Image 1: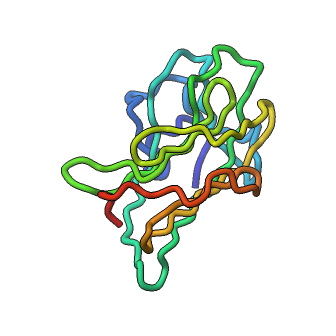
Image 2 (image 1 turned 60 degrees about the vertical axis):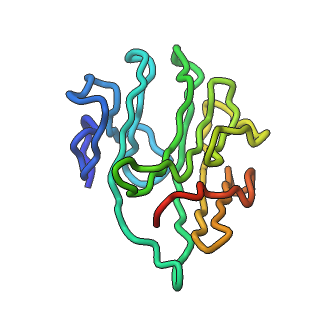
Length: 169
């Protein structure tokens, strides 16, 4: 369960922003899409290239449950400057010695939805509006040919994007 305050350290969340910059990544209950709380990453606190993540390591059983689905909601504020260069989500595998990026979805400063294809980011051709909540869903299918689909607000915006060949399950 989350409590109001810094995200770092709550429910297993870690960050490159350690010790935590006051006010930068806060769990708060004043503004959220659903549930009782949301994490707010505030670009107005200062330019940040920090990351926040929660390790969720589990094997994908390709034989019986090959699809991993990741859903999240994101609100991009247009009233607070500076705007972030990009906000979104990254998914990594458990490869050693270096984890590999499985998929990333970002919204850049021009409000374009970008997707990582295993080698670089590409534009989906879809833009989102600021000052509104948007729902994102990534379906990662580990059965060959190992591909992903991305949905924004229930509409598919990137389909059958190959997963990086070297990722592990």
